[in-house]
Image 1: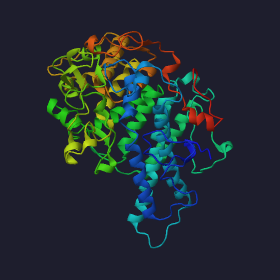
Image 2: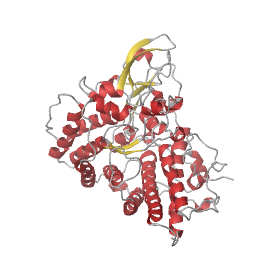
Image 3: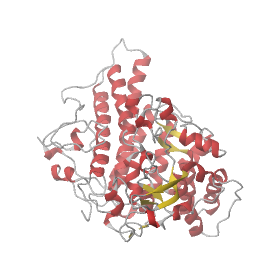
Image 4: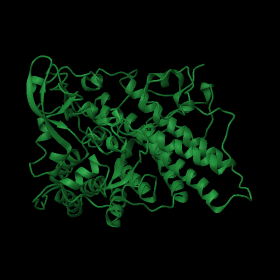
Length: 503
């Protein structure tokens, strides 16, 4: 029996492509529901496990490798090779995984919200019992908002206010838990305007039930996490006044502070410490490990080669007194299977033996993994700088850009920018420096209406088949492949889904 991901994919840990004919192994039976505080608490756990499985790993690496900052190395594993060479199609597994996971998390959220509509408090329930239920409800609204937003970033063209009402420009989603094998009940794609309104409405609802203000490295949704997602969404929808308002609200709160030096920045990324993260999902056990994001960028063993290395163009963005250069990158001597040898910088934000590896006593699959950092205060500085720059406020745009650069670059002298273009160009450079490897590069290029032009290699001799489809690849900003396709499995089952152009 054919069942669409949208309706039945409750198994949010689907990190490999699954058979459309099979109900996920831990999907909830249609006849069961939740009715007690314990039920709600248990269901809430599934929201976070689902989100952990949908951040980092190929959720970051696939759009990153698709862009301009990395080159494939001769002898690589061919992981993400179709993204790098742009041979991907609507049947490519990465798209199925991302789409299925976020739809699955939404199903989990809808399951909780369906239970909330039917919930009848008993006289024996304590205030803590009722608080447990409401916490799950708030988290469900937030999870659904985040999932819808991420689906829009991956699978929709850039938001433009002038075209936001266009039919089928947004995401297909349900607001109820109603598994069905009847394809006629599956929803079509909403407009982008409707999609973003739903995200906003869900965040409004989440804010009613989520009462914790927030603190650095907090592992659960908070009011500050709501504000952070509002800031990201406002920038995405070109609402620059709101983007600046939300971002500066978090900056000015004083609850999150930028690292003061290289040691503190390394503590943030390699030890899951520091005071920069607004939402950092805890990983208490082996069963809750996120994917090994850094595995594609470092030699896995002696004599091995990394799959991808940074371009020289990317490395040239970092001066020697930029503390990110020593934290985000390390040098390795690589010898390929053709005999070519070069000493190059490798990407090391997700270090081999980080805090999770040590906490889990050397567990192999904790290598190259960190606790998922969903929102950081550095992103809020970047959002504020870009929002003010786009609004033409050069003074405030430069203020927040300079404040971030002042913490990242030793001996930095504040810079005044003579024009909006000059400020925006440096905002773009700084965003690439800061957010490298966090999966946002494709979204940024789409938002800026820029195409892809791979940078100059560090050493061409170690690169995979240098040429027009690899090291020298270019793609115009209006190319169809700047937007991911809706997975073929989904369009096969749900005939209401309109595929993105070019697929």
